Amino acid sequence: MRHGDRLARARALHAVFAALLAAVSLTSLGIGATGLTLGDVLGALSGAHALEEIERVVLYDIRLPRLLTGIAVGAALAVSGALLQGLFRNPLADPGIIGVSAGAGLGAITVIVLGGSVALIPSGAYAVPVAAFLGAWGVTFGLYRVSTRGGRTSVATMLLAGIAVAALAAALAGVFIFMADDQQLRDLTFWNLGSLAGASWVKLAASGPAIALAIVAACTLGPALNALALGEATAAHVGFEVERVKTLAILSVALGTGAAVAVSGGIGFVGIVVPHLLRLATGPDHRALLVNSALCGAALLVAADTAARVIVAPAELPIGILTAILGAPVFLWILLRRRGLVDL
Image (cartoon, rainbow, N blue to C red; front, side, top):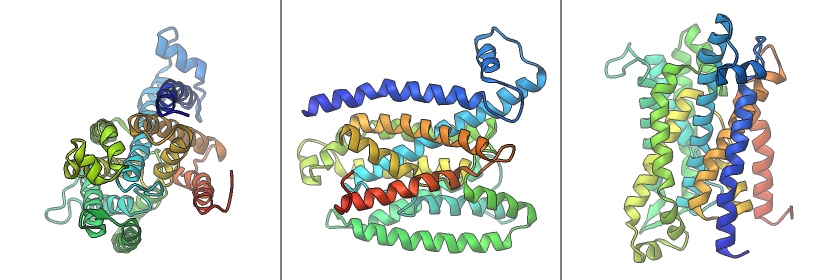
């Protein structure tokens, strides 16, 4: 398939993934423990059907902010994965695997446990996203500096350093968990498993702008990432400021991942599975890949969240468990495929 045909096909998938996202979003709004059905939701959104007070609360104060949070988090994680894979020129790079998510989680946990009780550690709705961003940015920048020598990035060094950083972050998080009181411990335990149950308009207002900014910035880097795939010297020769591109990519990953982890907790494998499978299906052109990753990642996370609410109803399965159950086998398949041990 010619490059132009592949790019046209990838761009045509924008509409497909947008329609898929709309479908799973409406399904998510129409499923829950109350009697509010999909027909009620469609009627309410179109203005053809009036809701009871409790139904209005369920739809507009619980399900809608949860849906929008799921869209934002899924898009942020998938786009962050696509950015890292393009930046390091390795399809196995991911915010979770290299420790970026762990750094964001450590920042968030620090504020949850110590916020307001220790000097210089604030509390409030915006404190957790900011701390998660700083944690993600610190880990991302540190990994890049450690793994880059002479203008060349060692993927092996990056992955090994990421494992070490993730282990250190997990150990420090364990210290804070040990210091937490009973209520904080319950919150942290459920938060570490990943969930959208705590979504609200306040949290969405705190994390949404950061995620939107990160995704918009990432989508402008498509041509530069395409050039970087040919080597940094080639990218510089055709007119891209390589160090500026790297810095913007790192900041976008840190901002998007940090805000997503802050509002949803630990949700793994979205950032590696979605962009990798899209790259296999539509090619490596980042101009379309980043947009498709955002749409597909959002649709996947909303669908997973809907399933998590249905599988063990009326209880709720943490979404991080579900994405790990689905994502780990796919990740194993990717590894085996790259080593030539499977043909599919």
